[in-house]
Length: 178
Image (cartoon, rainbow, N blue to C red):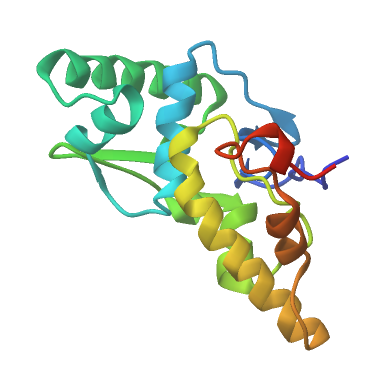
């Protein structure tokens, strides 16, 4: 198992971002019937408690910022709130004056632990791989992982090895590693 996801006694929601995005409460996974609602939550988690504007959410979710895209964000927000309310955890997200955020005091998150507490034990080189916009944060996490590993061992971390052996899709097949 990935880790002890969350205690049945804990009132905090656990957010898993490594190796895929998932949400857990009292030891159980939260099911999202709408993928855009789940992605909206993932964007808020990625921003780590900082406010995200309606226009930014529209850009991330739909790669547009027009009125129709903003209406889609409103619908995704409504569906997200409905899902969270059904579990009694609607307080983990906040909205005010066109700005959206996550309530960091009510959640625990593996990637936040790595960045703030230098806890790298669950990072295996993947961060919300289902979302292309998460690649920017992945590069910061790889850098942080290398720093943590360098402090532990006095050398470089495993991510350097992973980066050096990754396949570059822009090259032709003759240049790919075996």
